[in-house]
Length: 244
Image 1 (tube, rainbow, N blue to C red):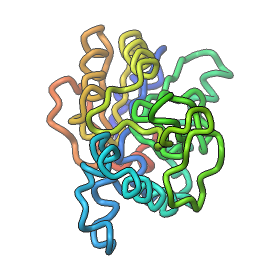
Image 2: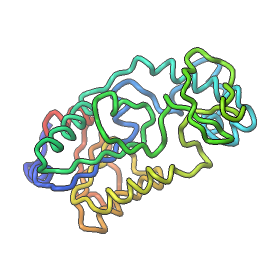
Image 3: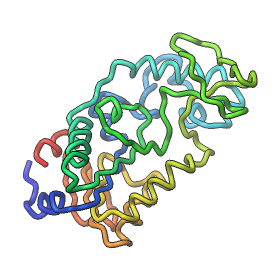
Image 4: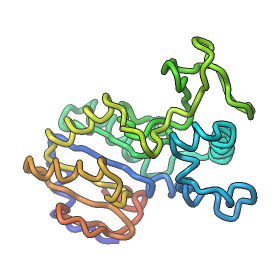
Protein backbone atom coordinates (compact mmCIF):
# COMPACT_ATOMS: atom_id res chain seq x y z
CA UNK A 1 0.00 0.00 0.00
CA UNK A 2 1.29 3.44 -0.96
CA UNK A 3 0.38 6.64 0.85
CA UNK A 4 1.44 9.95 -0.64
CA UNK A 5 4.11 11.79 1.32
CA UNK A 6 1.87 14.85 1.20
CA UNK A 7 -0.72 13.01 3.27
CA UNK A 8 1.86 11.71 5.74
CA UNK A 9 3.29 15.22 6.18
CA UNK A 10 -0.21 16.61 6.70
CA UNK A 11 -0.77 14.14 9.55
CA UNK A 12 2.62 14.73 11.14
CA UNK A 13 2.37 18.52 10.99
CA UNK A 14 -1.18 18.82 12.36
CA UNK A 15 -1.53 20.42 15.77
CA UNK A 16 -5.08 19.42 16.68
CA UNK A 17 -6.25 16.08 15.32
CA UNK A 18 -9.83 14.81 15.50
CA UNK A 19 -10.37 11.11 14.74
CA UNK A 20 -13.84 9.70 14.09
CA UNK A 21 -14.10 5.90 13.96
CA UNK A 22 -16.95 3.76 12.72
CA UNK A 23 -18.00 0.15 12.30
CA UNK A 24 -15.19 -0.61 9.85
CA UNK A 25 -12.64 -0.39 12.66
CA UNK A 26 -14.58 -2.81 14.85
CA UNK A 27 -15.07 -5.17 11.89
CA UNK A 28 -11.31 -5.70 11.80
CA UNK A 29 -11.66 -7.22 15.29
CA UNK A 30 -14.39 -9.55 14.08
CA UNK A 31 -17.32 -7.52 15.40
CA UNK A 32 -20.26 -7.52 13.00
CA UNK A 33 -22.63 -4.61 12.67
CA UNK A 34 -25.87 -5.00 14.60
CA UNK A 35 -27.67 -5.68 11.31
CA UNK A 36 -25.24 -8.35 10.16
CA UNK A 37 -24.78 -9.89 13.58
CA UNK A 38 -27.78 -12.19 13.52
CA UNK A 39 -27.88 -13.15 9.84
CA UNK A 40 -28.23 -16.91 9.69
CA UNK A 41 -28.17 -17.13 13.49
CA UNK A 42 -31.28 -19.19 14.10
CA UNK A 43 -33.73 -17.44 16.41
CA UNK A 44 -32.48 -13.90 15.82
CA UNK A 45 -32.64 -14.09 12.02
CA UNK A 46 -36.43 -13.75 12.19
CA UNK A 47 -36.30 -10.34 13.89
CA UNK A 48 -35.83 -6.92 12.35
CA UNK A 49 -32.62 -5.56 13.92
CA UNK A 50 -33.89 -2.01 13.58
CA UNK A 51 -36.77 -2.92 15.85
CA UNK A 52 -34.52 -4.69 18.33
CA UNK A 53 -32.28 -1.61 18.44
CA UNK A 54 -35.08 0.86 19.10
CA UNK A 55 -36.80 2.42 22.07
CA UNK A 56 -40.15 1.37 20.57
CA UNK A 57 -38.97 -2.23 20.37
CA UNK A 58 -37.89 -2.22 24.02
CA UNK A 59 -41.15 -0.67 25.21
CA UNK A 60 -43.12 -3.25 23.23
CA UNK A 61 -41.06 -6.32 24.16
CA UNK A 62 -38.29 -5.52 26.67
CA UNK A 63 -37.51 -9.18 27.34
CA UNK A 64 -36.68 -9.99 23.72
CA UNK A 65 -34.59 -6.85 23.25
CA UNK A 66 -32.69 -7.50 26.48
CA UNK A 67 -31.95 -11.10 25.50
CA UNK A 68 -30.72 -9.99 22.06
CA UNK A 69 -28.26 -7.60 23.66
CA UNK A 70 -27.16 -10.29 26.09
CA UNK A 71 -26.51 -12.55 23.09
CA UNK A 72 -24.51 -9.79 21.36
CA UNK A 73 -22.45 -9.24 24.51
CA UNK A 74 -21.72 -12.94 24.78
CA UNK A 75 -20.66 -13.14 21.12
CA UNK A 76 -18.31 -10.16 21.45
CA UNK A 77 -16.93 -10.54 24.97
CA UNK A 78 -13.67 -12.15 23.81
CA UNK A 79 -12.97 -9.75 20.93
CA UNK A 80 -9.72 -7.83 21.24
CA UNK A 81 -8.36 -4.54 19.85
CA UNK A 82 -6.80 -4.74 16.40
CA UNK A 83 -3.78 -2.81 15.05
CA UNK A 84 -5.92 0.26 14.30
CA UNK A 85 -7.18 0.49 17.90
CA UNK A 86 -3.66 0.01 19.22
CA UNK A 87 -2.11 2.55 16.84
CA UNK A 88 -4.67 5.23 17.74
CA UNK A 89 -4.15 4.60 21.46
CA UNK A 90 -0.39 4.82 21.02
CA UNK A 91 -0.76 8.04 19.02
CA UNK A 92 -2.88 9.57 21.77
CA UNK A 93 -0.39 8.61 24.49
CA UNK A 94 2.61 9.88 22.55
CA UNK A 95 0.89 13.18 21.81
CA UNK A 96 0.07 13.60 25.50
CA UNK A 97 3.67 12.89 26.46
CA UNK A 98 5.32 15.03 23.78
CA UNK A 99 2.83 17.88 23.75
CA UNK A 100 3.34 18.43 20.03
CA UNK A 101 -0.19 17.39 19.07
CA UNK A 102 -3.63 17.09 20.60
CA UNK A 103 -5.26 13.87 19.37
CA UNK A 104 -8.96 13.55 20.19
CA UNK A 105 -10.96 10.39 19.54
CA UNK A 106 -14.67 10.18 18.76
CA UNK A 107 -16.27 6.80 18.06
CA UNK A 108 -19.61 5.59 16.78
CA UNK A 109 -18.79 2.10 18.05
CA UNK A 110 -20.25 0.72 21.28
CA UNK A 111 -17.85 -2.17 21.89
CA UNK A 112 -15.33 -0.42 24.16
CA UNK A 113 -12.34 -1.72 22.20
CA UNK A 114 -10.74 1.72 21.99
CA UNK A 115 -10.64 1.87 25.78
CA UNK A 116 -9.39 -1.70 25.96
CA UNK A 117 -6.55 -0.68 23.64
CA UNK A 118 -5.64 2.16 26.01
CA UNK A 119 -7.25 5.19 24.38
CA UNK A 120 -8.18 7.94 26.81
CA UNK A 121 -10.27 9.98 26.54
CA UNK A 122 -12.83 8.51 24.16
CA UNK A 123 -16.01 10.32 23.19
CA UNK A 124 -18.68 7.65 22.66
CA UNK A 125 -21.45 9.02 20.47
CA UNK A 126 -23.62 5.91 20.53
CA UNK A 127 -22.98 4.72 24.07
CA UNK A 128 -21.39 1.50 25.31
CA UNK A 129 -22.88 -1.97 25.12
CA UNK A 130 -21.15 -3.07 28.33
CA UNK A 131 -22.94 -0.47 30.45
CA UNK A 132 -26.57 -0.35 31.57
CA UNK A 133 -28.93 2.17 33.13
CA UNK A 134 -32.53 2.50 34.26
CA UNK A 135 -35.02 3.46 31.58
CA UNK A 136 -37.19 5.25 34.13
CA UNK A 137 -34.83 7.20 36.40
CA UNK A 138 -31.57 7.09 34.43
CA UNK A 139 -29.55 5.62 37.31
CA UNK A 140 -26.47 3.68 36.22
CA UNK A 141 -26.82 -0.04 36.92
CA UNK A 142 -23.49 -1.05 38.44
CA UNK A 143 -24.25 -4.71 39.11
CA UNK A 144 -23.04 -7.39 36.73
CA UNK A 145 -25.66 -8.63 34.27
CA UNK A 146 -23.63 -11.50 32.86
CA UNK A 147 -25.86 -14.50 32.29
CA UNK A 148 -29.03 -12.65 33.33
CA UNK A 149 -31.81 -13.42 30.83
CA UNK A 150 -34.61 -11.45 32.47
CA UNK A 151 -34.69 -7.65 32.38
CA UNK A 152 -33.12 -6.50 35.68
CA UNK A 153 -34.90 -4.10 37.98
CA UNK A 154 -33.34 -0.79 38.96
CA UNK A 155 -32.24 -0.87 42.59
CA UNK A 156 -33.09 2.81 42.88
CA UNK A 157 -36.68 2.95 41.61
CA UNK A 158 -37.63 -0.56 40.49
CA UNK A 159 -37.72 0.45 36.83
CA UNK A 160 -36.44 -1.54 33.87
CA UNK A 161 -32.70 -1.70 33.23
CA UNK A 162 -31.62 -1.29 29.61
CA UNK A 163 -28.31 -1.26 27.67
CA UNK A 164 -26.62 2.16 27.64
CA UNK A 165 -26.56 2.45 23.86
CA UNK A 166 -28.30 4.95 21.61
CA UNK A 167 -31.29 3.37 19.91
CA UNK A 168 -33.20 4.39 16.83
CA UNK A 169 -35.60 7.12 17.86
CA UNK A 170 -33.24 8.51 20.52
CA UNK A 171 -31.00 11.57 20.53
CA UNK A 172 -27.26 11.32 21.04
CA UNK A 173 -26.04 11.99 24.60
CA UNK A 174 -25.79 15.77 25.06
CA UNK A 175 -22.36 15.75 26.68
CA UNK A 176 -20.80 13.45 24.09
CA UNK A 177 -22.27 15.41 21.20
CA UNK A 178 -21.06 18.73 22.58
CA UNK A 179 -17.57 17.28 22.98
CA UNK A 180 -17.64 15.95 19.42
CA UNK A 181 -18.80 19.25 17.94
CA UNK A 182 -16.22 21.22 19.90
CA UNK A 183 -13.41 18.87 18.86
CA UNK A 184 -14.39 18.90 15.19
CA UNK A 185 -14.81 22.68 15.21
CA UNK A 186 -11.36 23.35 16.64
CA UNK A 187 -9.22 20.75 14.83
CA UNK A 188 -6.93 21.38 11.88
CA UNK A 189 -6.98 17.72 10.77
CA UNK A 190 -10.04 15.47 10.73
CA UNK A 191 -9.59 11.73 10.17
CA UNK A 192 -12.67 9.72 9.22
CA UNK A 193 -11.77 6.07 9.82
CA UNK A 194 -13.89 3.07 8.89
CA UNK A 195 -17.15 4.95 8.64
CA UNK A 196 -19.58 5.22 5.74
CA UNK A 197 -20.24 8.91 6.48
CA UNK A 198 -23.96 8.20 6.15
CA UNK A 199 -25.10 8.05 9.80
CA UNK A 200 -26.12 11.50 11.00
CA UNK A 201 -25.50 13.57 12.95
CA UNK A 202 -22.00 12.03 13.27
CA UNK A 203 -21.52 12.20 9.50
CA UNK A 204 -21.79 15.99 9.70
CA UNK A 205 -18.69 16.34 11.88
CA UNK A 206 -16.31 16.19 8.91
CA UNK A 207 -18.20 19.02 7.21
CA UNK A 208 -18.07 21.04 10.41
CA UNK A 209 -14.30 20.59 10.60
CA UNK A 210 -13.94 21.44 6.92
CA UNK A 211 -15.96 24.63 7.37
CA UNK A 212 -13.36 25.84 9.87
CA UNK A 213 -10.41 25.16 7.57
CA UNK A 214 -9.44 21.65 8.65
CA UNK A 215 -8.01 19.09 6.24
CA UNK A 216 -10.23 15.99 6.00
CA UNK A 217 -8.69 12.56 5.38
CA UNK A 218 -10.76 9.44 4.91
CA UNK A 219 -9.46 5.93 5.64
CA UNK A 220 -11.82 3.27 4.34
CA UNK A 221 -11.58 0.10 2.20
CA UNK A 222 -14.33 1.54 0.01
CA UNK A 223 -13.97 5.34 -0.33
CA UNK A 224 -17.18 7.29 0.08
CA UNK A 225 -18.49 10.03 -2.16
CA UNK A 226 -18.20 12.69 0.53
CA UNK A 227 -17.48 16.06 -1.05
CA UNK A 228 -15.68 17.35 2.05
CA UNK A 229 -12.82 14.82 1.88
CA UNK A 230 -9.45 16.19 0.79
CA UNK A 231 -7.55 12.88 0.73
CA UNK A 232 -8.85 9.32 0.50
CA UNK A 233 -6.81 6.31 1.61
CA UNK A 234 -8.38 3.09 0.33
CA UNK A 235 -7.52 0.36 2.80
CA UNK A 236 -8.26 -1.24 6.14
CA UNK A 237 -7.52 0.97 9.10
CA UNK A 238 -5.12 -1.50 10.71
CA UNK A 239 -3.00 -1.71 7.57
CA UNK A 240 -3.01 2.04 7.00
CA UNK A 241 -1.97 2.90 10.54
CA UNK A 242 0.99 0.53 10.28
CA UNK A 243 2.36 2.89 7.62
CA UNK A 244 1.34 6.14 9.27
